[in-house]
Length: 255
Image 1 (spheres, rainbow, N blue to C red):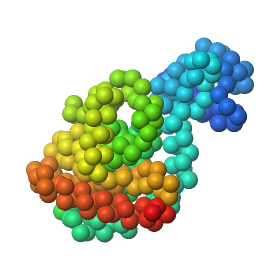
Image 2: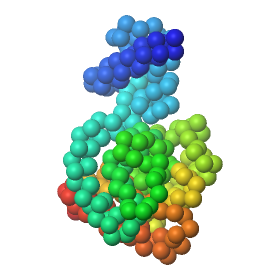
Image 3: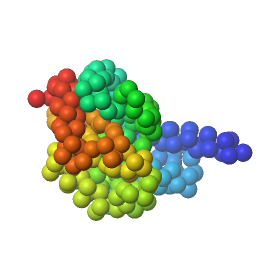
């Protein structure tokens, strides 16, 4: 029974997003309901969920709805993932070979990161990250590297409520204020990190990959056992990741 009820909801969600994408600008909920042939109550429910997830933006003064930043991320991700994966994979492989630690590259997908490249180092333990795996962006070094370079308004739109924060280990930021502090520290260092916030006993450092406009498009990270590196050694690993991120950025046309 659950399957039969959720599939129509998924189809309605896809139709709603497609409808909004086809409009020249934000539209009222009534126009959405009329255009899709759905009850207003159903449309309001879908809009509420999609707004919370960042795929829809509500303009209360106009009483209209438009696509949110998460939907933009999906569209841009489609156009960049294939070339980005091809351009980044050999760079990540060389980084892993030179450092002896696991390396990966991930892009922002709504409030999550999507892993496109995963390179395991010999004799290193398996990780929860893998190609096509999604993880909360605010808990990962890759996600924080990207979020740190986004405009504050975009970060706020991605995390509008305390319920926006998914906690895996109990160690990550749980509010927008806490996240902003983490991102501010990442910008000041020039690289992001996490320690035990995705997997207990493991830490990561990451740097952002930017495109030709300077917009952050991915996070390139190294993951290792927490006890294996102290502060200075971690900073050294982060510098290696930053050099690799700059190389991928250069391949994407960044100066």
